[in-house]
Image (cartoon, rainbow, N blue to C red; front, top):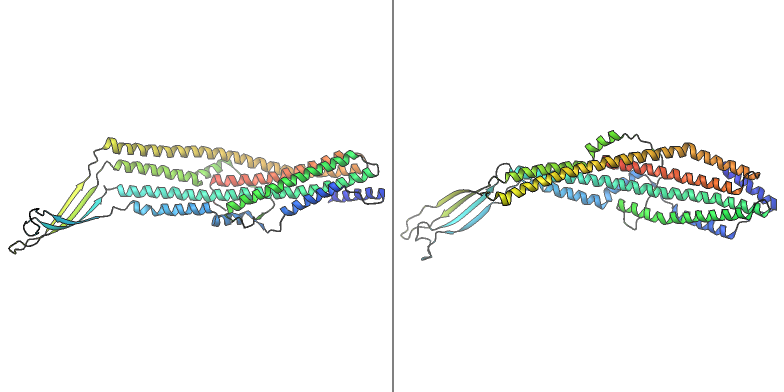
Length: 444
């Protein structure tokens, strides 16, 4: 506020020196109109939406989450059938019929037969098959939760990226307005012989750079909005939300505690643990294949009367059979070796993901801490001092103790620091979102 009042006072004094308002160049006016138009396009009349509300929306509408949920439901439906026994076999026919005669009454052993057979796996196989399917479903369930957490992370990152673009646009627009006032002051002082033309050109050049920055920001915003709408699962004809201005919400980050939490709660790691357990169950099942299965058959044979009318008794049969797993070297041993390899692969993948998680967690914690320190420094030290420098430079410029370039550089320094502060806030919040994903914190 003090800076604005000082600029206004200095502008009025310069205008009084020539008896008329300070002139404004047509090019500068056009630049101001262009910048104002871009800012108007960027700051639309949209309700500000908190990030938590958008994360909850993504949980309902994001197609990746729905697809992962359907996959989980399908995996759960496979558990019970995996432990079921095979369907029984029903057979019917005629047995022991002589070729020389078509009658069923000539031979005693000719009969019409109806049979039912059932295969029973060796004890323990059904339970192992069901355990394998259950571990599969468990792994898919953890993958679903990982998808949920990843989408929430993506929402937060896109949210803060868009918030940074909007905040940068606001700061750039404010800086453009201040520079426009500086341009008027330089033109007024040049008109009364108190300034030089180089100051006017420098101010105009700086204004052009600011307008170029607004154009760049205006080009970035649609891309950020499209990414946020994508992770939210919104249709292309639905407008993107307007995020809140980034704020500094400090959180205590202890690397060792976060690593322990990740090992216990990160769905990705838990899914790999389930795959390891599945590999162990698959190996046990492969070794069980060395034991035979049982086929039990019951049949009923109906016999007709003899040719002279005597009654023949019907017959029943009950048989049991087993398969002989004799092809161990070519059939069973490779399956055991395959199961061992798949289990070891899951173990190695778990170790690799654990190492990657630890590395990324260390990086994100360090990034969050550095961004937090930078934001604090900007907020409590750099920005207040830089703003005081601009006010002091403006006061000194009024009495010709500093040149115009010093004043202009002081203002641009404040602007750069404000952008740096907004960037640090966005980086801090995005780092926290990454930490939440790595530690398995459920969203939103």
